[in-house]
Length: 185
Length: 171
Image (cartoon, rainbow over all chains, first blue to last red; front, side, top):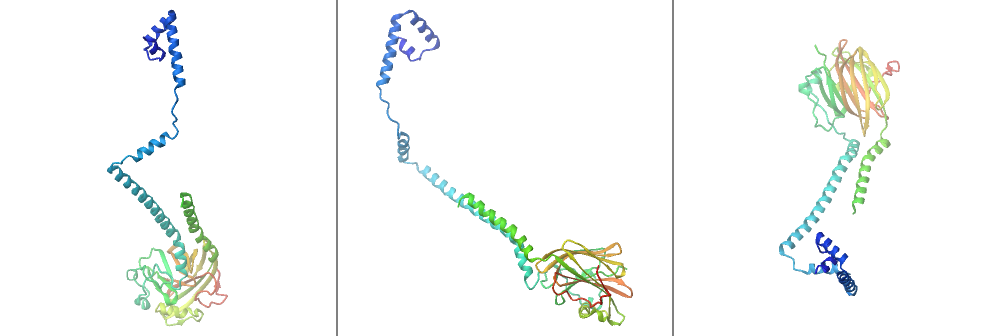
């Protein structure tokens, strides 16, 4: 009774060992086992295996034809929209970054052309002090350099002096900027 | 547009933006700067204006209210951007002028005025080509000293005193 299972290797190890010992002593069972083996081989040889060509695609197509739940359809549509919006945002961000970098890098051009303009750009200038015309020794507090006038011909970015009464003013009509350092008492 | 072509476009834009300003500067910016220094003594002694001051007379009278202007020294020199040029002025003053860059019609420079070895004033500025910076105030003899500093990259020099060759000194 156990020969069929032995042939198919379906017995437990101890049972396999027991049947194997028995077969070694019993010619009848050995013949029956040989018949089982022959029968199994013959059956396997006459069975036609079905062709699997196109099987997976057919299964997928059938799955696709199955009605999709509403929530799944909404989720897929949202995901597609998010993908397209995300790509758009990425492109937009890249374009903005390129524009910003270009503007920063192109600033020297702007300065270059601005400096070619007839009216030079002024960054530091002090208004002429009428008092200076009669008394050049003026207080710096009354002539603090300003950064707003566009008619000066000098742009003073740094001015250091031990003298606390430095005055700065500009005379655009004479292309002249004056730094006045009155002698300290 | 593929990612590769996008990167290539960005690279070209970046290289153009980096490279062209330097190219423009190399083509259009002269590197030599002429520096003109006039030292003038101003006082209220009613002696009038030194005729050697020439067109500077009107400029000085427009800026200040002194009754006497006298030319006490004239210096001029030529230097390259980045190289300092030193002038010895009357009254123990020393003037260092270092052009740093020429940016369009402006000359960027550093100017340091010494009284002997003591720095009186240090300034970084951009002076218009052929423009003038006047540094004044230090006491000199019976008046005050006015130092006119002009710079140009060529062509007509800024308004300056008409000093005779004997009075003009280089550096």
